[in-house]
Length: 282
Image (tube, rainbow, N blue to C red; front, side, top):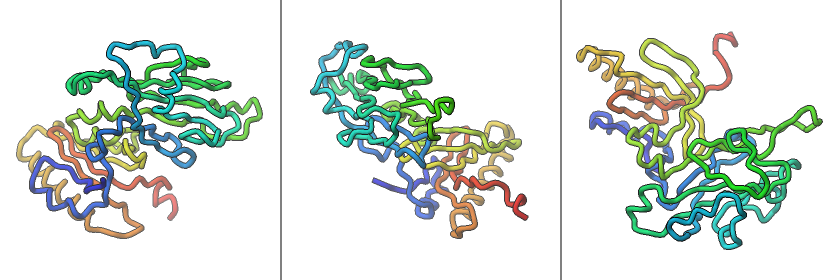
């Protein structure tokens, strides 16, 4: 399933393809995978790929407030503490079967399926509550999940003498939506915090939508350079920089993992250095 991470609209950069470490990109994932629970706390919770589907009749909209049928639950993903759950999280404040995430796909033609006739739901089966974008769903109630929705299984409340745990769990990624994204970088990476900014570029945290791995993305705005000759010089400098960095292999040097060149922006995917500035250690 894995292939090289370099994606470019120019043949001059194709030679870099074999110099980068493998990345799993959205366009390399089987079509059967329709979503990802992207971990917001990767040290505590694993990123999960979702592909089970429950067909239903076209136009059926009964999945709003009632529990799914027993047959539907087979095609969903139960999250909770119980050993039978598909996604087990050992936290005393999480119910044995805390919530169910499932997809309902309307029966119909292939063209109907491609227009987004399927929907993804979260049903709250917990005692303490499940939250979507900060709003409590409610026991035995269901809510339709949208791309980018944050799912919180339980809230950390130090006032109740809870032992500390990260209460940032998952953000839902709709791969059916991202497969149609024309920008190849945005198709496979979710941009998060800004790490730095210059005259023509910024550096932000980039999260792989499939694996949950975190990187630093250098984003160069080509539109900020209006003169054609200067833009050509920028493109050449970018090519040289990526070519040099891609050939460097040392544990003390930031590694390049991919390069994307679009019409308006250029993206350089690098190791995310989280231990501060070198000068602070000198």
